[in-house]
Length: 238
Image (tube, rainbow, N blue to C red; front, side):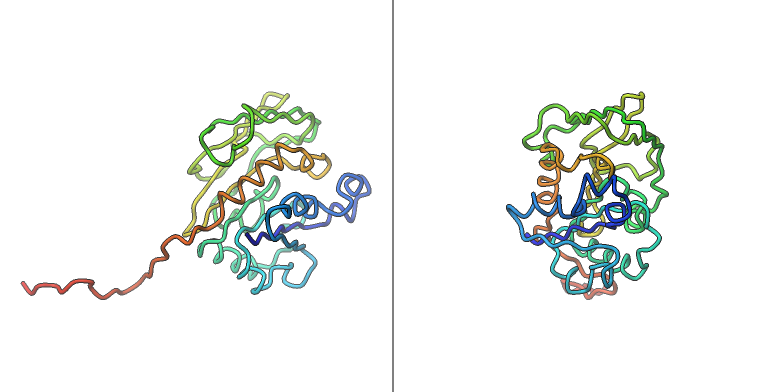
């Protein structure tokens, strides 16, 4: 499978604290554990076309998206190209603060807003759909010692499937794993991954991402033609 991991790559460059956690960027940590089984490329905001050229998108089966502080800097024309690829069948995995990305908000059609707090909350992600392939290899829950809190209400459309629900030490809950279908494409939003915590080194979090790219890959499902259509059978004259 051809996977592209997209990351703003701003926090890791501008903050020594974040660089200490992800010295080569969040995208390279994710790419490293996925590359054991897949052909993985990375792309970042400051590259030409944000690293998402027509050729890259054409040859990407699943795109992983991490963004936070520079959502507005992503060019609208690139967002539209990514959106069209999703509608055509490319899988999309949106991580953590990517909930506010242009591409996720465009595909959801809502504000995608939520409550948040940075206070080193313990997070427990409960598996609420143990039959779902994204949960393969996990226990009943994933526990993270420290994470940023996201809380309900999460302003997204009702998910096709809710896979994880998080509980936070401060009392909030959150739909932390949600799937959607748009056109021929499949989308998975996965909440954990604030840049100041080593979340993407966690083996259970890695397992979820590994499972999600397999789930999101297009299986060459039928693609329909739209617009004016000739009849398949002869229409009898009344």
